[in-house]
Image (cartoon, rainbow, N blue to C red; front, side, top):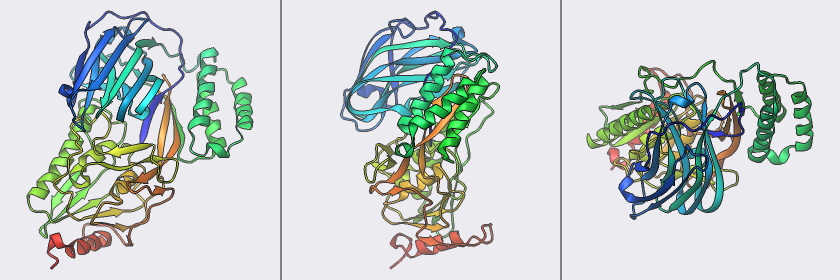
Length: 472
């Protein structure tokens, strides 16, 4: 459940504006015909661009994307920052900036801004995204996303090149600025921020920062800050030597849907990681899972077993979209700090990386579902567990989940490092907040193998008592 938020930067220089690939803005998205676009200016110019994007049809689902293409070559080997301000009017499903780096017929990096999407009617809000630009990137696509109905406007939308300092470079003002922003980020967004004496924490951090002489040592200051917090779910991920994004050989995790002879369809949900961030892979996973579930329903399935016992990844969105036939339309959960008041609501449409998702009723929405959970149901798997909570004709079997029922907000460093911070709890569609391991309705212990799976057997037995599966 990780979302990447680009914050203060380790900046050595900003390159001049590149040659232009396009002089015009265009509309893309899942339903581009449902939106009107007005735009002026070039995002590579210092003054930036202005964009107005509004819904033109009363279509409650889908999204529109204002899009501009820029050559990637001038940015090779560095990072690109997309920044500006955004305001919304009546945008219940939200709006954000987005940026993508494409190579030769493959997407290398994408940030769709879903982690910092703004909702409803808001004043001008600063937005900032950062992605690396591999040497094989050919085109940068940038723009503004609007999901659902409403209007959004952007001003000062501009692209800047960032040249990261080497890991052993001296700690200069830019690095100290980053540490200050990281501390502010933690202080404002950490879930338990009201329990910390922040003046003492700041003093301790700056004492260690004063002895840091390189960027690598500055990373240790961040680790020390997390150690001070004592939060096992928050973490710092150091930069890899080089990241070039997914390759054509990489494949999305394979979900398995089997229709048994007793007319019960068994859905095994794997873990999905944010490291597989190619939109084509996201869509491929989602389409495969959704189509297999729909095929099982069309072939006469009377009920479904959804096995989440091996679903422990950090990306819930493609799984949520793939399970749409069972979850149906509307909102199915969210992230929240308070009981019963989700700040971010989930729908099966997910973020913009899954444009083929829909909020229309699913073909299996009214069939009974048995959900299997256990200690391997973790992070995104627990979010999917919560998405089924409150669904009619649904029962849970197995063992309690891992108990990492929190959402993560992350601060990205241009050198590839990542500060992942616990900032919210999971909340179901009925407003119940989950702060610990989630117990099943029926605790079923025992081994799990092809020959002996007590939790699966209990789930199948319960489905056999349901009207759809032959109960009189």
